[in-house]
Image (cartoon, rainbow, N blue to C red):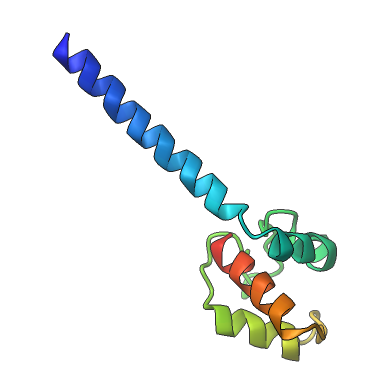
Length: 100
């Protein structure tokens, strides 16, 4: 009986952790909105699209925030154009992409 309670307790801890991760992933509504409106058409709704062998998907890549910001500011030839935006919006976007 004790092992059942311990198993249930462990399951609740794991599920709570997963819920917290999901909440953390969507707790940046500005970054998410900018990504969905300005980036998702090429990179996929969740950043899952592989654009070429040398350009893997954003999802799971954990690119550094500064590298993401530079890519948005300067573009990534030949396909990704420079994308001007205010610094605070760019910060939200880069943080969102980083956690994909």
